[in-house]
Amino acid sequence: MLKADGLDDAIIGIGERCGQEDILVYDVGKVIDILIQRDGMNYDEAHEFFSYNIVGAWHGEETPIWVRPYTEDED
Image (cartoon, rainbow, N blue to C red; front, side, top):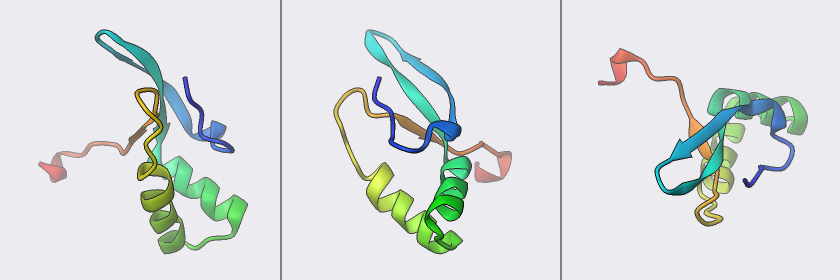
């Protein structure tokens, strides 16, 4: 499984997929908080960095998944 450097505190579990290797699952909110606290970014900077540099990075089939809590308002 691939790990995102410096984001261990945002890991919330392991994802299983049929016929594929397990992958790490990260909480997006926790990742944003880490970027704010560790790197001194404000929320908008952290969100932009996350969107472009973390979610936007594909490292093959073992690329982690990034999860936001689901709410019914999003339906």
